[in-house]
Length: 127
Image (cartoon, rainbow, N blue to C red; front, side, top):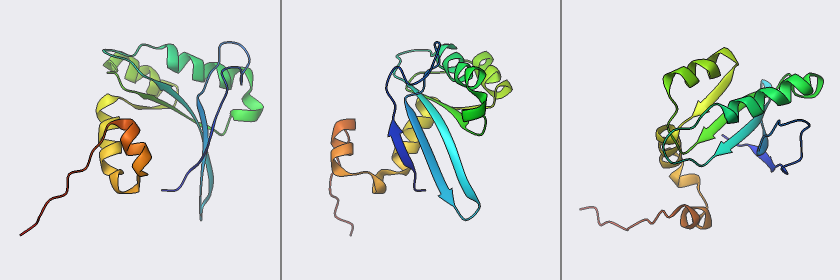
């Protein structure tokens, strides 16, 4: 999947709304646009990231009503917060999902990205 992405500044939205990345994906069916909030947490991620995404749509519905909201976190998300995300059309990638996504995309990652993520590949002889 090919995405075009822009990293957003901390003051890109009014109020307390925040998204770290605006991304789009174009295919033969059209363009999908995403607002992505990224959180790096040990333990559990609370509702704040979801609330920041919802605030964007509440304050700027004409501009972002068609954007899909995504929260990516290195932490865990409790079931109650997953339910809240579902009720607000927010897709969540928690720590486990994030690891699976990175692992599944390993062949597409640039060597510098792998290095920054602390991923090393060890050659193997298959015999």
